[in-house]
Image (cartoon, rainbow, N blue to C red; front, top):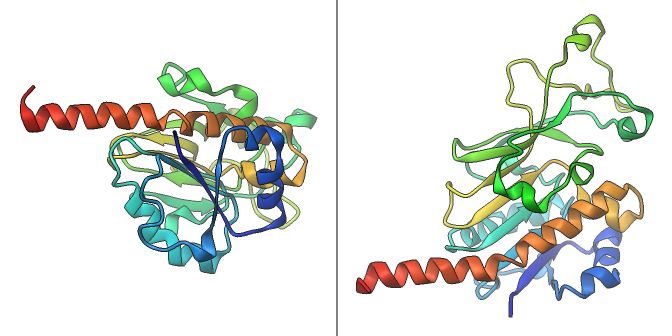
Length: 242
């Protein structure tokens, strides 16, 4: 059976995610991060790193997560607000403000889906990735950006607006401004990284795009078992020559 770990720190929204009947039907495995030890992810095919893990706990388990990425054919989705720039090799993260309702009021903040011919888009959708974000990423050369911020000509005529916490939220000049990427080359495992915090908003009961993104990422993670079989078969051929 495909085994997908949902790593969380027991926040109310994590527990609400686990109680969602649609998620329970996927057999997502409850993995409480404060108790996670080296080797505990052995045997899992995929990992969903829940949004907004407690920073202290995340700092401790980060080496365990990175070690899991050395598993050929495995998959990992890293949800937003997890300071990936502090622990994920090859990635940096820069804070951007949060315009919660741009998608409802019609403000064009420059968010764009990109590389739409990439196979990953076969399981993704525009409304799953266009609600809001909490930062912009740089990433390894092997990564494929899926969503990014773009500097728009009309933005040049106005000052950079800020969110209620005085953080600017438009694209940073000269930055890659990636909001979500897919990477199948840096590690033996595949990884998707996002600054959108889907599991937080799904468990909090608002932001419909977040619910769709969480469901779609779980669906992708559940395909990891077949991917691992392909990797095992290739390794067998390389070893035996037949």
